[in-house]
Length: 439
View (cartoon, rainbow, N blue to C red):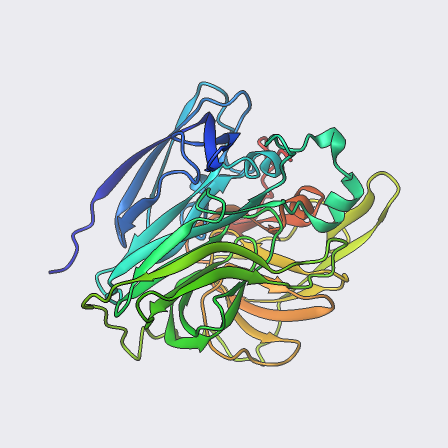
């Protein structure tokens, strides 16, 4: 029986609360509904979500629905919405057109608010999803805490280093807990959805060399599962995997391997959780060979109609500036509804940057001239140093202001972002002046 779309209501309250990361280790978190991460929101493809957000913090906030193809007015940025002031309530309302793993997070004072816990998952299911024995979400994060479990104050940070690297914490978390124990039954296969909610930490997923199958990324399912033993998940990215085929009583670590993103801080191998395999249970899981069809938007040799350059350079005022097309907090030109966009995005700096486009999915046509191993819908993609990618995307009928930026929060804050408008080509274009603009 086909799903009949309905309206799904949620209430989120942003506030401060005490949260136990591990036994005897409690912090003052900022987050939603007194939990970290915030509540897991679920709906079906085609449903309308009505999410009432009340702000009980002492400062303004805005909520961005990362990866959702929603109206510009609901995107949750200072360009399209007046911030939700302390004591105020705002209702976000939008239809979920795509199944997949998405998330919500603060888009105001992110380097503080997200660091303290202002995020949660948003899962959109489809009747055609593969069947698994269990479906679980793992939100990856880290926090920079003092020995007495307080957040490191701004005045005690090395600001040049934080600006250069982004903030990597000393406490590694999965779903708001330090080194949790996870359990899975032998004989069963589960869908594990990973979301990297960290400010800057790159997560190279590894489970003791055990193979796992990537079945989905930012924009939902792949065409076919890709079996690997490790997979990189950068800030903002999502990765869905099929996990199973284990022997009863075995135990293994869920960890990140070192990944050199060219920062002062050298990446280390780190265990995030321990997985214990319980007694065998019967399985209902079924993973079809063909998960979906992703039609190519265009060919690899398509003509580029926009060039975007990400760069890092010296700054007298800040030590370092993070720029888009040689500008801080840039304003890029408009794109017309229905006109295919083929963008060349170049990272001319000597460090990695995860490029995130709000509100739309793109296909990566090539990286440094080479086609990728498989086609996927993406909204966040890592650009290694001295790397150029060519992406294609189609602005559908959702006019308004949008943005793209580096998803390392400190780089975004330091200027590596741009706004642009999606416009109706049949009307004269008048650049809109944003009265909401805030950094």
